[in-house]
Image 1 (cartoon, rainbow, N blue to C red):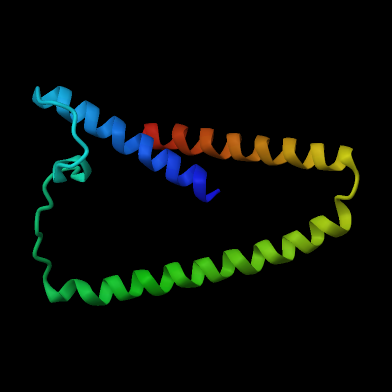
Image 2: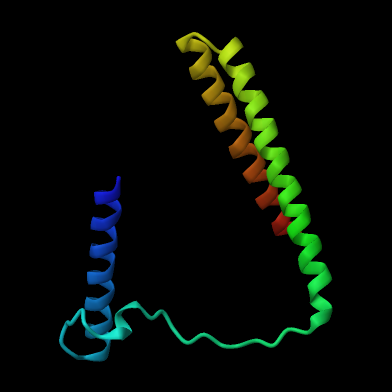
Length: 114
């Protein structure tokens, strides 16, 4: 996996350098520092009054993550116990795909009416 990540990173850097040099009309070099820049970072000054809401959002996200891990662990045990044949595994996958596609469709349909 490490070599795969290294290879993909090297290819993406080479591609970015090539496209950047073609856009700027210069030669392809990997030594310039502009190869890994994706744009200017703008400093946005945020008031200190935003700190409590950021802490609250962090706490809510942490609780949701802990809940997800707990639910996933319990469901994994139930899946190991009850979904033990190949046909049950296929049916579970189809049911999950159907539920996911239906949810995404309904969210998109509802969002277009807003």
